Length: 100
Image (cartoon, rainbow, N blue to C red; front, side):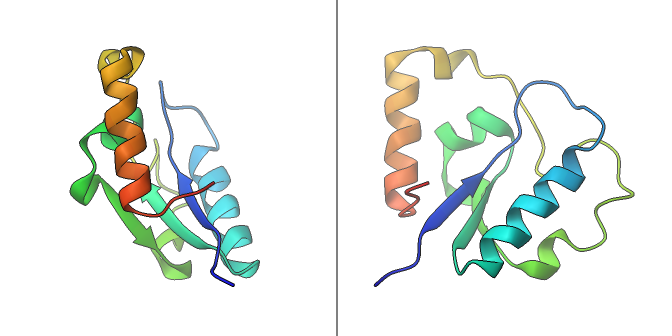
C-alpha cells in the first residue's frame, strides 16, 4: 500500500502563527507515514509546478517558529480563478502524486 501524499500551502496574506501551523501539519502527517510536499507561493506555485512543489521532511520545518511570515511563501493568484488556471494546478498535483 502506497503512502498518502499531502500538499501543504499557505495563501492570501500572512498571519501570526502560520509557520507554527505549517510545522504542526507537516510533522503530524510525517508521523502518520504520509509523504508531504510544500507548495511554495500559494496557489500560484500550484499552477507553476516544477520547483514550486517540493517534498519536505521533518528537518525542513525545524527552526521556523521564530520566523515571520510563512516559510512556504504566499501569493494571491488571479489565474487560479480561471478554469485553465485550476486545470494547470490539478495537472501539477497529479504529476507529483498529491492526493490530499
